Amino acid sequence: MKETVGTILKKWRKQRRYSQLLLALELDVSNKHISFIETGKSKPSQSMIIRIATFLNLPKREINQALNLAGYAPLYSELPINDKNLKPVFDAIEQMIESHMPYPAIVLDQNWNVIKANVSAQTLLVELGYEGEKNLIEALIKDKPDSSKIINWYEVVSIVLSRLKQEINLLGNPEKLIKLEKKLSERTLAYADSDVFNELEAVITSKFNLSKGEYSFFSIMAQLGTVQDVAVSEYKVELMFPADEKTKAYYPSSP
Image (tube, rainbow, N blue to C red; front, side, top):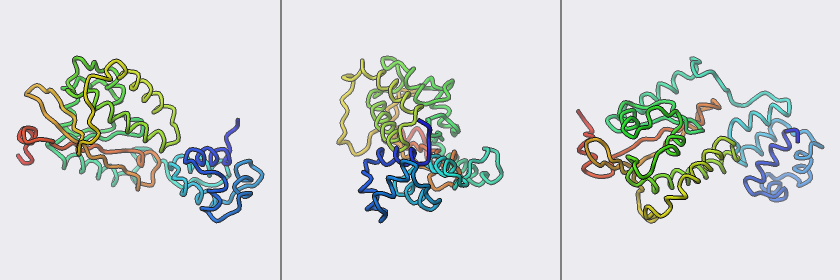
């Protein structure tokens, strides 16, 4: 079926589990108006597209696509990475991950490709044997749980899978993430009983067997959703913090 502004909005309405009637009530328009937009019998105004898209929490990329198919200009920019208008954003990202030293910090795009990492994160990736991998999920898929430097491999992968499923739902079933989630999920089947996964723990840590001992971290994710550029708004920054005193001592907060 040819994609139209109507098919896009219908897909996302169903993705967010709204009936036409419920969506119409929420937006204070007629049920018939929503139906006519979705079937192509009525061309929605630019403001109506944005109104529906905002309510259904569409990704910026999808909003642009819907507007384009209806004959309107995109709402969000999609600039080359080296565009001067993005420099303040990348300067802020650089400052964030460098200020996080000596702890690891890594920047990922929507598909979990590694965009940038501070020195501490680069060292960690090398110790894990991931330095040749551009995609963090692919690295986990290729990792061998029995010999992995991640002590609680199954627990860590379970958390990653949970995050992937949430992102897949939020982003409307993107093909790349679906494939990665499926491959990683299949990788865990043989190891499902290898660790006890306690979901009641206040903080889930990643435990690593590194060259100088065992160290534990927990992570805080920062999303760049307020950035108006399509691609850069999809970036996320993972900041890792010591989860115990031994790790904190190994990674002192000051020189």
